[in-house]
Length: 210
Image 1 (tube, rainbow, N blue to C red):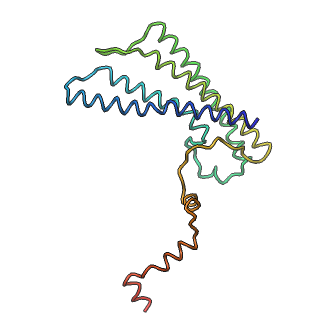
Image 2: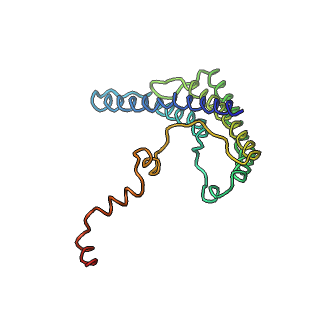
Image 3: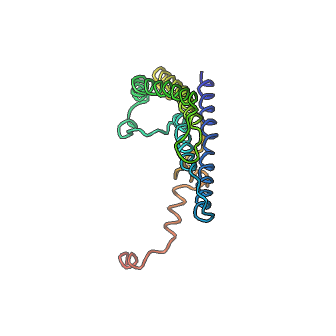
């Protein structure tokens, strides 16, 4: 079971990282358009629509990746003080009541929008139109991957309710906190205190000590 959960985590991570390269493409496109518009005096009407589509794709495809890392925003004021089983109970209820209906509706509606857009060969409304239907098909694809990761999270809640502890997740690059940084450079609190004590006191503190 754990191997299957981690396999889905790895897939969601891979999916998010692949589409994360759109940030580079978006930056390059905007930079090129600024240069073309203000230096070459050759603006392109389709670039704004392309920027919106790229950003929308980047935003939607990040959902499953963020969920696999437990990175979505949560009201953590009280949640963090609860026991794992209490946390799992809350998460399970919220997944069933809100997450599953919402993401299922998103995926179903997105597939309908994509089919309708493809049938009419929908394009943008500007001087240089570009097709819209590839972007609309991103909605059901991103929704399906997010739904798959959601089922994994529901299974994790059930496992936590049964065992009393959260199962492990696929690790990824995370922000390094102070404790982790100290371990990396082999620095202890005693060493920091020794360095602080060896520093000369400011003049004001010398007078107070005298």
